[in-house]
Image (cartoon, rainbow, N blue to C red; front, side, top):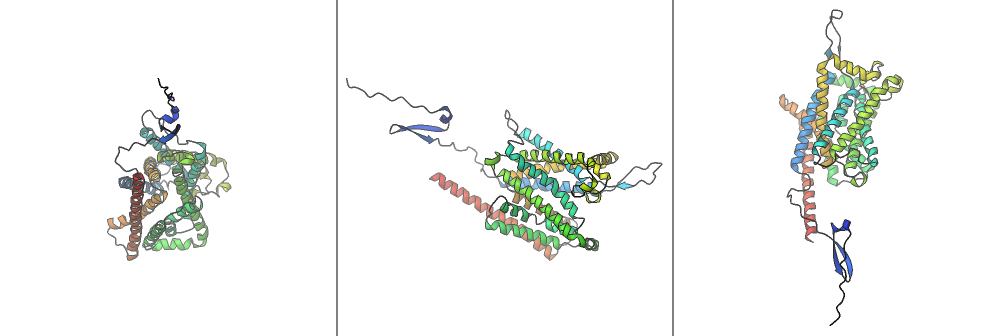
Length: 419
């Protein structure tokens, strides 16, 4: 009987590799070959869709248009105290507690974001933590601080510059966003992006400059001319803080290798929790800090920033709302609209980019002016029509170029698969 060659025992893969690799014998050696990935059964494209963009933009517009109306109602309405036998002609007062208002809004937003996280998490899976690791704490704290300080610096600048200059500079906030992306995060953009940013900024500026101004506004502008340099400095700080907020958020979303995968609702909960902590600390500590020290921080409204009574803003705001229940309703509605709007904002940041978000928020202001003119039957001047054309021309050009880029990437992806 011929002697048979002993069969070599079959080599087995480790358990941790068995699910992802195959074994193949070649020249008495084991070669590991990746298993082919199963084809996705869902025919929907992986990238974000046009419908998502429309929903995000519509949600931002609807939420923050309502938010703006309520903000104006809260800050400009004069509330009269009830008449009493001792005071038959009571005095009137306005709500001027901006830090308290921001604290209420951030509290609502943190709660809303947590509820969204809870119901959007798959059954049986833990709720994603808003602070998944220590590395993410610093950029999140940076976002919370910059967003908490940005608007107070903007309000402080209005004491030294006219409102037209303020609006004009705010309409150009796309520039600091791109500048910070280039300088801090070393991010590069295609040439058409720079052209789009230039067109949108130029269009909004042109529309705003050709908006008719009244003699009252011109007089106010002339009265504040002497301190305009300081006002422009404060406004520059506001724009840089806005840009820092947007670019840092974009950096967090685009760096999963540094901070793990982070979603919009997680960002919303984390940032608003930190903002609530910072502003609450301000409200609780200011009664124990001298008014002279507070004068260096424009955290309160202009009219009351240096008022000794307003150093206890928390108790003053609560007393005001107790005296005026209508104001309390507006404050809570304002916070609710802001919280819902932030859901759309953070969803947009997670699925698109901060530049797109800034484009939406900047053009929202101009669209509001256009709709107002159309609603009341006013006529736009030639310069304003030029501004409208520049803005929507830039946005349309960006949409066309992005569509071409996506089509090119899809084609390259299909070619790689064919190989």
